[in-house]
Image 1 (tube, helix red, strand yellow):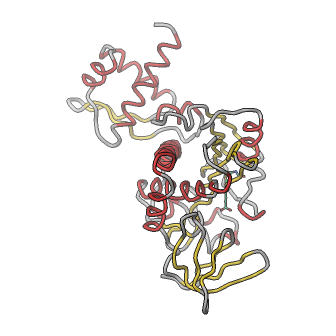
Image 2 (cartoon, protein in one colour):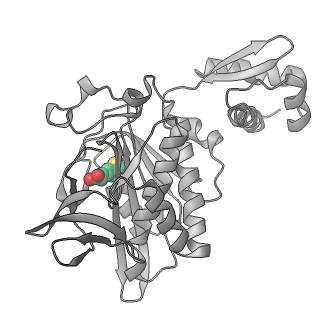
Image 3 (cartoon, helix red, strand yellow):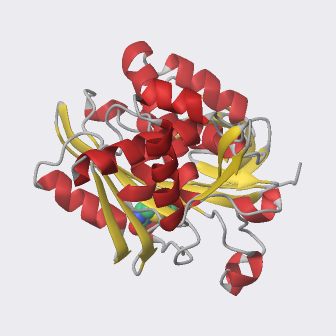
Length: 331
Ligand code: BTN
């Protein structure tokens, strides 16, 4: 077998094991499904182990993937992806200024819908409203996706809510209770787990590209956070009490994101709005919202058909298109 065919079968064995999750798969089932001899399956498992994958092999039960190398390169994420577009081209960096800056540059140069930039470390991570974004090197997840949606620019803000719903699902699938603070912060027990930065380039009636930048605190421990973030941020590992395999989680985020983007493209904003409401940590609560240099306080009542937040203040219903929300009372 030539080298590339060998690598390809090895990726197939890995995908098969990854798909089975915590379950064992028999060598026989793999060899039948993948058209490989039992000896070849064994050889691929050995070679995966040499690359840092931990695979249990138990007589009469088969193989089980126990751990994967804690890196986010295409070698780790690629075989775990079950998307048609998102992440099929992955640009990987050990260190970069901001994955969103790289993705924007790639988009300008004609990158395809679904290309992803991922980095182990960012030296100039950016957050919403001109803030910075801290991402512990090698511990967290920072990626940016280039999208080329068929949407008028007025509807592009919907994608921010699409992304928050998808990310919330990926976090919940990882066993962590999470809710969304409008528009797209993910919170666990009131503390921030993840944020999304949406940027776009458009003309009057056409979006050229959207870059969705996603930052998730995955395995950083509270003591490793900058002091000012400790009271307000947390991570999946802190919430779950054990680390989360980053490559698996990255693949799950991309998969959930693609599912929700497809649904949004096919059915419009309605189902996304309903899903956002269900996952909201904001609706029904007393909030303070900074809108430019104005601040308003009231009850967050709903989001409207374009994703704007509706806040009942004394006497009137305010429609907030963009702003910073503070939840005033703990649940
Ligand atoms: C926020 O909550 O303020 C949004 C944070 C978004 C951070 C991500 S990390 C990956 C991508 N690259 C960046 O520079 N920012 C986004």
